[in-house]
Length: 286
Image (tube, rainbow, N blue to C red):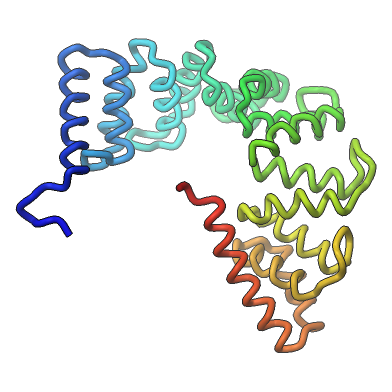
């Protein structure tokens, strides 16, 4: 334990870094330093967390054309963090960053046109922005573009292209895309129906804590599709989905519970606890 009279080397290092950032941001007005200082205030690294100060420094950098600061400022206006919520200003800053090729801003623009937030809903424009971000390898944009192709929103419906984009995102570990792949193999959409492969993708997403995937995996065990029938495993996965508030899992679990012995329920509860710990380990940053 560090003495109260002696400052931790880590804390001292952070204070030194913030001091340098502040001086460079204040005296020289360089966008990278302003952006870095905004990030420190946003995260509370080396300074007290202050979202309003983060907005102030992000804006200084954004006004000088710093793309990531523009994107972050857009997010803060979108969410109303450190400033009032304003979809119009969020859109404005996302557009500035997106025009410089910032993939996160392109994704956000896609979402806003997709949802009609601050703009008239326009699936075609949404798909265009998703594609720009997806082409840069952003997994969540690849997933969203896959959704557009799957539903035929803003683009012609094409299960083959949907599958292609879901695969790109899923290979990066994107849980939503993994769920979609499981669903497409489960239903035989764009591929030959294959319950075994569906289970593999459901499991990958379920282990990351995706409630819909946990519910789907539980049903696969319940019906013995793609895996041997196993009511204990089914109950455990439905339990996890129910714990995340997924209503369909609550109903399925209640039906299954009537078919289990007290010992099986106890086994399933233990599996639930172990799977929950494993899920937390997988999704938690190192």
